[in-house]
Structures are given as structure tokens and as C-alpha cells.
Image 1 (tube, rainbow, N blue to C red):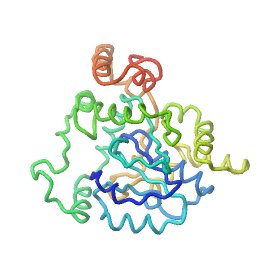
Image 2 (image 1 turned 45 degrees about the vertical axis):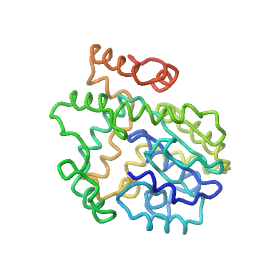
Image 3 (image 1 turned 90 degrees about the horizontal axis):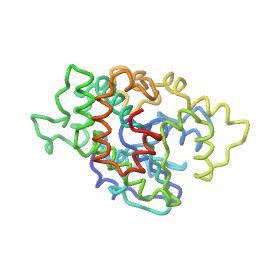
Image 4 (image 1 turned 90 degrees about the vertical axis):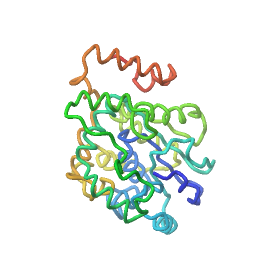
Length: 292
């Protein structure tokens, strides 16, 4: 990513920026915003064309800006840049989604396994070139272990700025510190799973969008995991990147880590969380308890 690209995005009143750590419900939140804004399940274009990622280096910035300028509807963009890396504009609503980091680690593992990194590098080369990358490790990703447990701990112990528990903690902290601001909204993936209707209605209210009551059942169904997975070719971002677009919507569940971690793992994880998170944020992210 190149966060300086955001300095070139001319915001409009009512713009929405969906800023989440990777694998925390970004595409889901984009779809919910699309359903609320268009108030129909039939979107005019693929989701990632309607809701672009300005600081991604797989598209030329001029093309992204030109497309945004032409959009007549209320705009909603995605990013994995934390709030302290974005221009803060009172006219813009900033949405972040948190998720249990253990589930994020499991989801990231599937995400990388499903990604065609050669295609990703080719898209980047075509858009912005490769001169700024280290030829020995162009993707910036560590070598992939054969062990699922080792891959989990690689994510947890990673101190990088985009991927890993440290990066996730920093991202969420930038929103947690300003969560009472009127144009900042911090959602939780677990609450979206258990009460999708309540979360969607709450988001509509925060965005000032009125939905006719008779439209709600159709919109809620379209935002379900099963419905989105069935439309993977329209909803998965950067479609050529995925070996299987349906697998991008892998499970969408919480608690998958329970099949991988034992009590010793959980104690080790709790120690790492306490190193990184403020206690109130840790409690909220884990919905009450880090070790259960």
C-alpha cells in the first residue's frame, strides 16, 4: 500500500471510508454499505469497482481518482490503513470492524493459501512497477510453514505494519481512542454475526439512510455469508487474484481457533495480547475473555 495516495483523494460530504485490518470483515462491510446506499441487491458494477481501494498498488492512482470523480452516488471506499494514516475530515464517516485476532489469524492463513501471488505481483508491476521492492522478497511475506500451528504463531508474533497481531492492535487502537467522535464507528465482527439486522439498522441510522421497511428482508438476506459466497464472482475483490473466488468467503465463522490451540497456546496468546493491547480494548475485542 501507499498511504500517501489518500492525500490526493478529494473527499465529498457524506463519503464513507471503511478502514479495517485485513480479514476483519472488510468486504462484508462494503457489501452492507452498498445495500444501504443503493437499496437493492442488484449492484450496478462489481463491488470492488463501486467501492475502490485507493492506496492499493494494483491500480494506477489516476484511474482510481477518475473513477471516484465520476461516481454520482454516495461514495464508500476501503482501506487497510489505520486511522492515523488517513486524512481526517469531519464530512467523512470512518468505519472500522474488529474481530477476535485468533480468528483473523486463521482466516489470513486461508487467504494467503488461496491467493495467486504471481498474479498479484503482475498487477502491481503493470500499475506502478516493481523498482521499490526487494527482488529477493517482493511480496514481503515470510516463507510459509507446513504446520498450521506454526503459521498461526507466525501471524501472532509478526511485528510488521500490515499483517499480524501487532498491526491489528495498532489499527484498532487508532479507532478505539476516538470511538466517541460522531463520524467514527467501531463495529465488531462477532456482533455482526449474531445480530446482522441490528447492526445493519444501526449503521443505516448512523449514516442517515432511511430504508423502507419492506426492503429490509431482501437486503438482510443479501448481506448473509451464504448469499455473498454464492455471488463470489461479483463480490470478491481483485477477482483474478484468487485461485477460487468462492473460497475468499471461506467460512465466515468465529471460534475456528479452538480446533487448533490448546491451553498452553492460549496462555502464550494471552501474554502476547497483554504486551500489545490496552486492557479495555483487549476485553472488547475478545468479547469479555482472552482465554475462552
